[in-house]
Image (tube, one colour):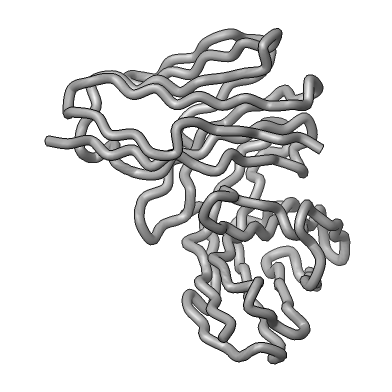
Length: 113
Length: 111
């Protein structure tokens, strides 16, 4: 589990409500990532961070924002959740940017009704 | 951007047989090709990876081969066991911050 904790692990919400998912790491790594996993699509990168207050967009960033005010925490926010954002969300860290190896958390299952 | 295609989407083998999963990629600049195994309810876990400067890598019962000219790479599992049953993902990246994944292969090993 590479010292990654995601919360909440499960959430059901209604369309139009804001949602924040949290990723917490205990290993002080610089790079952190948010992916979503959907059947038939594998994992797709939403946003990533390369340091405190340093973030960038991924392949499917529309409708999502992120923040990283501390090295250990990377937050993913859905300002106004839609049914298309029903998914399983995974946080990952890159322990060694030279190798590119990603270590994933256990996932957060989000259902938007 | 990079596009990774993975086949087959499902694979069923008898215990002890071999399993092969194949992936193709589109970006010739990609230079890192990991494989992840995901068990039910868990996050993906790296099982093996290969870089573009080698053609094959082996770790006990699993091996990965890379053909850069044809832009494809494969995962080989020999002497399969029931605990190998899982979903496997290939991925490719030229830039460690933009890793693209295949859609996944659900492997079932029948006892």
